[in-house]
Length: 251
Image (cartoon, one colour):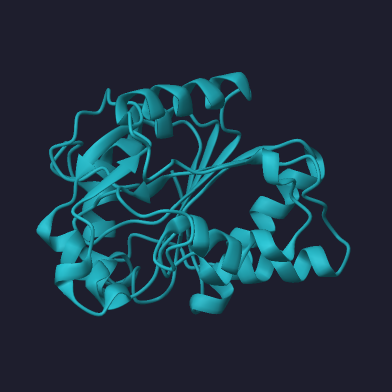
């Protein structure tokens, strides 16, 4: 596991975008896994800038999103489909047929999950997966005590996750209680993983993810077993690592 500490959120976003862009330059038909939430917004903004400068093309790229709220359709402004269009897809030349996001209003959820896995497999697997991390250690919407062998599945969101996301919905009562998420096994099958964390509220979670035992109670801890993980942190998220001299800072 490689850990990079950026000076601030902007540099974190630049570093993540540069890694993704370099991968796409080297492999134009890359299969990329994408995350939502506030942390990757800067990364997407930077990717758009790199695209607008003519340095990369998304024409052959295939994308798979980590998750989607169950019960929200594509037009809902809180859906991750809407989020991805707003922050990335509407601004680049990715083909619509190459964009994959779980269908939050699928009538047969088990079939939707099975088909999503099939599409990932048919694409050749995910080359590079972007992750955020929740304060409770979730990746995707894989909450504490998730089974590590899980593939794409329907999950019950933890109270901590619901509370954290309530800021986007105006009221905690409006936050969906279920979501469709890639499973831990699906994420771990990615060839390369980039995890982003910003803010001091993530510091303890990051420390535990890197240094404590691997346990379903902290889903992100399983990343210790992956052969190619890069963790990019800002100063706040890295503060416990820095205090104990466990990390070599990078400019």
